Length: 133
Image 1 (cartoon, one colour):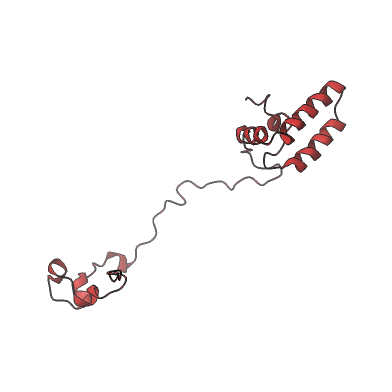
Image 2 (cartoon, rainbow, N blue to C red):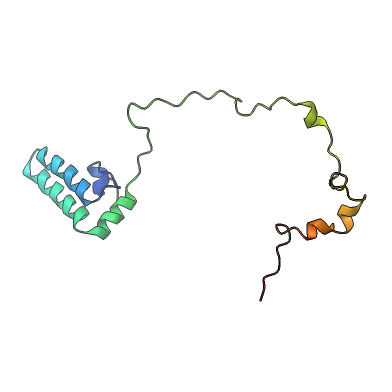
């Protein structure tokens, strides 16, 4: 189904509209139609979209969504090259090395390599209790 075959694209209908919205728009188009042949094509398209739900859904899925900004919308602001990519200023705290975690926790040296401290084993977040049976 190309753009000429798809009634949503041919008559610029919103694929999100239901039968009521489609009927209102098609009525407007039929009133503005130049001749009876065009009115008949509009009526056939209306029947296709309102009477046959599966055909309406298929046509809506195959309609191309509008990807342009609405008319009258302000253009996006100009992007300054490298604006978002500039590094932040470094502070002294960024350059200082951090102490080992064992020292911060008050554990003996090398404790993080061998065994797990008792309070970590009892932590309900790190070691949830076994499910009861």
